[in-house]
Length: 474
Image (cartoon, rainbow, N blue to C red; front, side, top):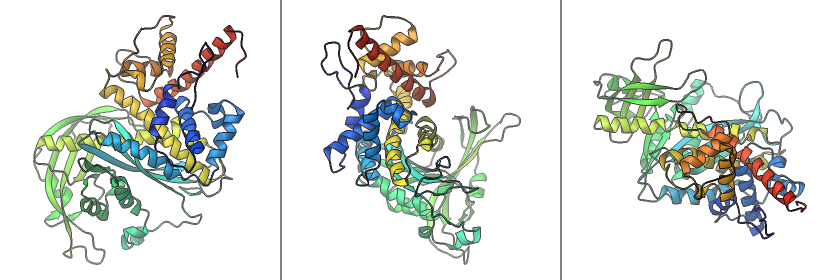
């Protein structure tokens, strides 16, 4: 656990990142207390300086060598690391009546390290890497609560893509699509009985077996529809389109690709449908049906040249009123939290730049950086949901005081620590956030930049303090 020396030469109190890491991984079982200690050290180091290379973050050869030794240890299973975080996550989940279990997949491109062992194809032109399917727990207010489960794998070197006809005739259990069903079961394990779980996913999860399995597990589903599924009375999209507009709502759409962020005005239609299980041999043959609701949220008055937003959502949640429909759409909009999680994992923690030679080493690093990425993302949203809370949980006294003085160009700091919102803004301003009236709340990008700069400032302050005392540092 990292500490900084005090002026009187006694050991300093561990900084906030070390305290957090020790708490988050307090129940980790890696077979040796020294491994657990090293895990806490690595996680706190990554939290202080996300995006830095392992040598740069560790700051010295001995710490760097210990980090590489930990990541190369074949007796350390990545899932053990995530299990400890999951246990802490379930503690946070238990404080809510409802939790959104948001699933999605990302592809990690390690093409810059072609000698890495154990990678597989992930796209065109022989790109090699790993695939990570993750389930993120999110509160109905939008605060990420932690990673419930993560499955990482690599395709065989000569993996062949199935044709559309082959996919239709192949059972889900024999396709990569099975990961969606497996994640339902893994993420539900140990979930408090008092918590309602809503599985939220994009169009790739529009699989009848996925919808049916969630129902069997007692979970609700909220999935963007990819297919106009056959129902007992026709087709799901058509049935919802024939329903009158039941209400409207405004939703903030984030920037994606070349589309700028904007607020959209959505008209809502919904209808109860009985979805039939597809049968490739006889599409209309009577078979199992699922009672669901088809909800269509279509943008009204889209800007000129912009493609109108249209979400077709299949859900097992009760939709009996416009308020119910708005709740479903608002919860589906929180699916972007996992997109930002992946963005933080890859761009903030720069996991695709890791050069660790083997897939097993990368998997251990990915487990650690996944927890750090969640923490960065959670801080940005917790500051919005609980702005008046104290920042003590993520900044030490030295850290917030130094950030306050640097940002405000003063030698004087308040007697009491700032609120969580103000503390996050201090770090964000170190990362380039301008804090102008119309800038809104800072995002995760300026936060990870700010933490990296704060790390450098703290080190510089420690060195300066040692030099003033006329002592060598180290």
